[in-house]
Image (cartoon, rainbow, N blue to C red; front, top):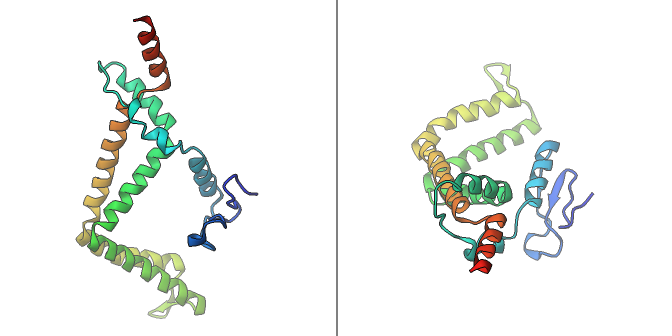
Length: 189
């Protein structure tokens, strides 16, 4: 089964063959609900030209219509806001070298564990450890590294910055109903 972008929806999400830079690159989503969520989110993305249409940015004259405007804009641009959130996460990770090193070390350790388990099971003090126990040990050992890298403050920065950017956009972007009312007001004059 393929969608209108040429991506396969069973097992892997492949980049369309027309893009030579990403040919053969795929992201594996084994969980069915994760695949469905990813597909639904991707299909729900509004055009970015509509999202950044500065002619539709208008500061509300009163506070009363703001909650209704915010709710409607969050419903309309939910998928776009998810991409904004993801972009802020990537920005935060790339601008914090120590956090980038901590993530690379944790993922590297997990990769090495998966390679070692393909050869044979890892034994510690004569007891065979399951893969989940080994990953838990990596998580436990990497916790101090993430703490030193400032991962906690990075998480709260991303949450705060996302909330600010999303609420700012949702509160000043006029909805379709408001645009129609503005046009009616202009016609009456």
